[in-house]
Image (cartoon, rainbow, N blue to C red; front, side, top):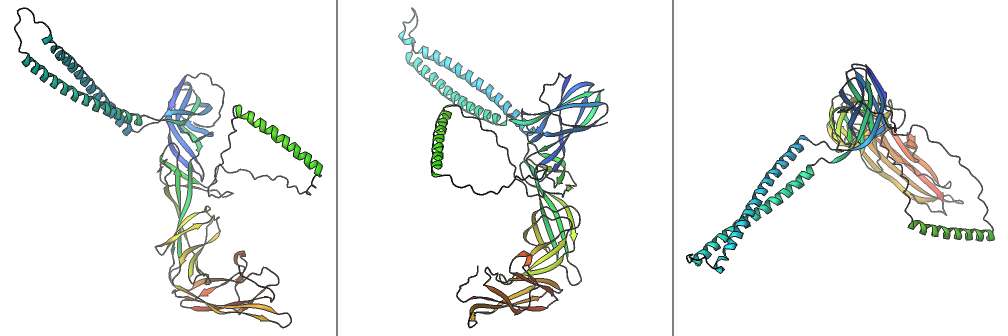
Length: 553
C-alpha cells in the first residue's frame, strides 16, 4: 500500500495521542539545483494498531518547512493526518570516538579525585602529628611529677626537631602533589567541557498517523533546503587530426557540488537539475509611465509661504524626534532576505543529470566533483588573426551541439592534442546551437603585417581638403599538412561627422564589413591549402575640410 501526503501545517493544538514514536531517518537521495536542493529521507518504522505521532528530529535547520511532503508504503492500512514542523534545539550527536574520549576523561578524573582524597587525608594526618610534636615542646616549662626522673631535654629537643623537619618535608611534598593533581583535574574538566554535546537547531517533524493494525511502514520525507548548489564545468579535448584523419572534439560535462547544511550526505544518490525553484515564476509587471509638462514655478509670495510651512514642519519634527529619543525605540520591520542568483539558465530549458554512483558530499562547503557525460563532436577547424594587434593566428573549433540537454555557462579546460592550453568559458548554449571554442595560438600558421603607405596631404583648388592615406599588406601562410580555413580581421576608421569621408583605397575587398555589428571591423575569410601563402592588400583614405583638424580615438 502506497501513501502520498503533502505537508499540512497547523498552528492549532492537537489532541492527545496514544504514543509518540521516535523515528530515525537517513538521507537517501538529493536533487541539487543551481541554488538549493531537494532532499529525500527514508525511514523504516514499526507501528502498532491505533493512533500515534511519529517524531522526526533529524531534519536540518535549513529545511524549508512549507516544502515538506511525505510519501510512503506500508504493509497494512495507514492513514496520515496533519504534518507539523517546527525548529527545536537539541544536543548534537557526537561520534563514537568523541564518546570514547569523553568516557576516558571521566575515568581519569575519577581516578585523580580518589588520588586527591588520599593526599588530603595524608596531609590531615601529618597536621595532627605536627600538632602533637608541637605540644611536646611545652613539656620543659611544666613541673615534673613527684618521683619522676630527670629527662635529657637536649636529646628530646633533637628528637622533636628531627621529627618536625621530616613532617614539614612530607607535608610540603604532599601540598605540591595536591596542587599538581588539582591543576590536572582542572585541565581535564576543560577538555571534558569542550567534548560536551553542543546544542544545535534542528527541524522537528511530527506526523500524525492512524494504523488499522500492527504494520511496518517505509516513509519518505521530501523537503527543500538552502545552503546547497552545483555549478557546471567542462573539458574540451581537441584532436586536430591529419590529412587523412578528421578532427575530433570530446566535450566532457562535469559538475561541482557543494553544501553547508547541518549534515553530510553520506553515500546518497545525487541528481543535478538545471531548474531554479526559488526563481521568479511569473513575468514582472509594468507600472504606467506618465509624461507631462513641467509645472510652472510658484509665485514669489507663495514660495515664501511654502518655505515657512516647511520650516515650521521641520521644527515640529525635530521636537518629535527629541521626544522619541526618550521613548523606547520602535522595533524595525524585518527586511526580506534577497538571495543572489546563481549563474544558471532561467527559462524553458530543463534537464536533470543523475550521477551514476552513490557519492558522499560533506557539509563543509568543500567541492565534490562529478562527471556527467562525454560528447564526441566533429568540429570545423579555422584560424583567426588580428594582425594589426598581434601577428599570430589562433585556432578555433566550431561545433554544433546535438539536441540534448542545454549547456549552462561555466569554465572550460582546453586540451589540444593531449596538451593543456589554458582555460576558457563556455556560454549558455541551447540544443542545436553552434559555438566556436578557442584553443590558443597555432604556430603552424604564420601571419605578417606590414605598413606599406602612410601619408597625409591636401587635394582640390577651390575647396581644398586634407587627406590621410594608409595602405597595409597582410601575409598568411599555412604550414599544416592539410587545408585550413582562415579569418583575418582589421578595421576601417568610422566617421563621427558627415564632413569626414572614409573610403577603401583599392586592394582586396573585405569579405564582410561591420563584423558582428562592430562598426568599422572588416574581415577576409577563405581557405588555405597545405603550404599555401596568401597576400592581402588593404587600405583606406580619410578626407576632411582643410580648415578642420581630426584625431583618431
